[in-house]
Length: 498
Image (cartoon, rainbow, N blue to C red; front, top):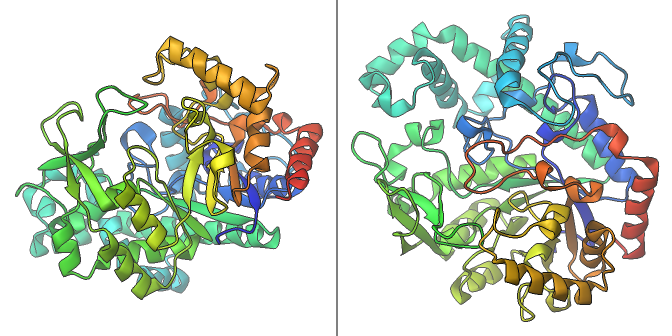
C-alpha cells in the first residue's frame, strides 16, 4: 500500500505563480504546500524535473539525473512578501502562461549572474563527489553543447561526439568555467529541492515524482552511455520509440527517443537503471513509472518513419529488470502507468511486483464495461480525473472529440449520456462531479490536476500529444485559490476519508 487513502494534486512547479515568468522552488512553492495542507491534500505530484530542451517538454530532458535550472529560485526575485501576488517583471511575462521563449534567456542571465557570486567551495566539491556517477558527464555535455551553439551531440566535433579520451581532456580544460558553473547550478537546485521536500514532510505531504521510461536522444545519458542504446555507429537513431494508433492519434505517437539495448543493459546488471531509480527514490516518496507497458514489450519504429503506424512489438526486459532493481534497492514505492494497449502479460508483471496501476475517469464512459468505472476499482489503484496528457475535465466535457482525440461526434454524445447517468450529473460543474466520483471511490489514491480543481477549460491543458508547440505553459494565480474553494476541496476530502 503506497498511501493509506489519500488525495492529492498534480501540478508541475513551472505552473506556480512565481516571479520571473515561470514557477520555481521559491516562496510560492512553499505557499502551495501550505495550501495543500489547508485543502486536506496529502500528495503533491509533479512531472519530471530534469533540464528541458526543444519543445520544453519535461519528458525530453538533457539528463535523467540533473535538475532543471529554470526551477531554481534566484533570490532577487523575492520582491514581495509571501502571501501576496507578484506582478510580472516585464511586458513579456504573463501571470497565466509561461512563455518559455521569453523566460529562458532572462532566467538564464539572472541565474548565471547569481551563480557567479558563489564560491566553488567544499560543499559544492562534496556534492560533485557524491554525484560522480552522472554529474561530471552532464556538466561536460552541457558545456560542449554551448560550445557547439546548441547543436545535437551527434553533430559535434568528432572527438567530442565520439568521446575520445584525449579530446575530452582538452575540452574539460577549455570549458572549465562553464563546467564549474554547472556544478554550482546543480548544487543549488538540489539544496532548494531538499528544502522543499522537508517542508512537505513537515506538512504531512508526500512528494510524488515521475520517471519517463525513455530518455532524450540529445542527452548526457545517451552521449555518455552509447553502448546501452540502439544506435547507429555515428550515434544517430537506428530505431525510435513510440506507441501504435490510440485514443490521441490515428497514426500513433512517434516520440523519437532512442530505444534501449536491453541485452547490453542486462549484461551490466541493469546498472544504469538501478542508479536512475536510486536517484529518483532519493528525491521522492513515491514515483510514477511512465509507460510501464514498454517494460513488457515496446513499440519499435524505424528511425526514418514519420508516423508510428509501421512499428512492431518487441519483448522488453520484463521481470528481470524489476528483480534486479528490487535486489539493489528493496521494495520500491512505484505507481505503474498502465494505460494504452495493456495485455494480460503487462498486468501480470505489474501485479507480481505489487505496483498499483492507474485509472483515468475521462476514459471511463466510452464503454459500460470499462475498467475505469469507479465501481470496478481495486483498492490498490491511483485514480485521476485526467493526467497531464488529457484535456482538462471541463475541456473534455465540452469537446467534440475531433480536435484532441480519435472520438467521433456520435461517440462523444453516447459517452456524455452515459456519464450523466452514471454520475447523476445535472450539467452543472462537471469537474466537481468527476472529483467527487474519484474521491468517493474505493481506490486508495485520488489525484486531480489543479486545472480541474479550478474548473478551467482546454486553453489551460498541460499537453496535447503530437502538438509541437504550445504545451506545458499553464500557470495559476493565487486569487484563483479562494478560501471558499479551499474549504470545498477540504470538505470533499474529509467526506470521503481522504
